[in-house]
Amino acid sequence: MNSASNRFLSRRGFLAATAGFAMSLPMRPGRASAVDERSIKAAPSQARVAGSDRPPASAWAYNDTVPGPVLRVRQGQPVRIAVENGLAEDTTVHWHGIRLPNAMDGVPGLTQPPIAPEASFTYEFTPPDAGTFWYHPHADSLVQLGRGLAGMLIVEEAEPVAFDRDLIWLLQDWRLAADGEIAGGFGSAMDAAMSGRVGNLVTINGTVPADQAVRAGERVRLRLANAALARIMALRFEGHRPIVLAIDGQPCEPHEPEDGRLVLGPAMRIDVALDMRGEPGGRYRVTDDFYDGLAYTLTTLAYDNAPPLRTRSLDAPPALPRNPLPEPNLDNAIRQEIVLQGGMVGGGKLAGVGGMMGMAMPGMKGAAAWAINGTSMIGDGHAGMMPQFMLRRGVTCRLTLRNETAWWHPMHVHGFSLLLLSRNGVPAPHRQWQDTVLLAPKDTVECAFVADNPGDWMLHCHVADHQMAGLMTVFRVT
Ligand code: C2O
Ligand code: CU
Ligand code: CU
Image (cartoon, rainbow, N blue to C red; front, side, top):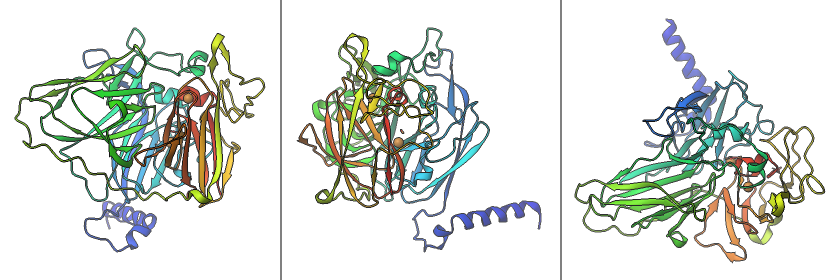
């Protein structure tokens, strides 16, 4: 046997051994069951964030592109993703929003050893839910995400859903210095205790947005993801009526957003159906007016001159097929409360952290500006983090998130999607599930989930500065 066929055989043998469960299942035609193999490498690179006519900025990238490659995988199909670390520091990859085994969650110290420079690690999981997810490092998060390491992870529905086009907008926010390079000064005390590192340039799919070419009459599925470190966005589509189909990857009842604004905190995703009801040749602005007095035009929908794709207008978009999320049992729920504390208050003082109530865990460097239930865990995740609470596998947890601070926080939970029950006492509409819940100052949100996935799971603010400075905790499902 020559060496080529030898290699081929051993490769097959390897596949059969590790994917035996898939191989032994009867395969239905058209059903994906073989392992989908991908690889990504994190390494220093260049990114033309400010446009092709400007010098590129030094960035960190997956497979040399900012954002990283779009990983499209299939619901229910096992995927194996080899991650190689070409950086000069440790990294990991976290598959944000995917319900997967704890060991594949990518939290250094907590769920895996960090991937050292020049080392690699292979993640394996079978995404149970279709939808819009993303991936990013969970080591030195503020710097690694801020230098460009992020990518879209799309899990295709097992049965395809019909749209004329499937469009992705991965939104990033950069703080560029005058020379066009990414500004240093990550983790300043000011950013940490206030709104986080908000930048000065918002990009779509890695570059300052040009016009978005569209055609009259088409129905687009637009997948929006906010991969910014800190910037909250509220998008309006002039002359259009986007219908929200899914939030954080999870289908909800289709609805028009309140006030016509799509609000995306860092790490949040929204899928909308966007019917191009403008005129051929027309131009319509997409604006972001989240911060008072700082509204700007993000991009423009530029219609080509082609006649409308269809003449009669479409019916309302149907709901996306639901994902197999376990239904919370509220009659028998375990109540837990997460109280967010700290941050800068009037007079440049910190609200009671670091002194009386803040208690940094041993072995953590950096300063705490925030706390959860009186404890500040800082950094990215560590070995020996003490769980804030424990849940027996299978119980329903009714979780209250209470923001006592004067700042906004997109609170993210790993490994689960939360069914939103109410916000400030008002029942949540649209049956929405989220992995990242944006809390306005003083907001209280109630949500619920079934603790069906064992392990130690992170719960943290996705404003990277806030996470690093204490807005992070862990809970355990046993
Ligand atoms: Cu996007 Cu700890 O996660
Ligand atoms: Cu996550
Ligand atoms: Cu926060």
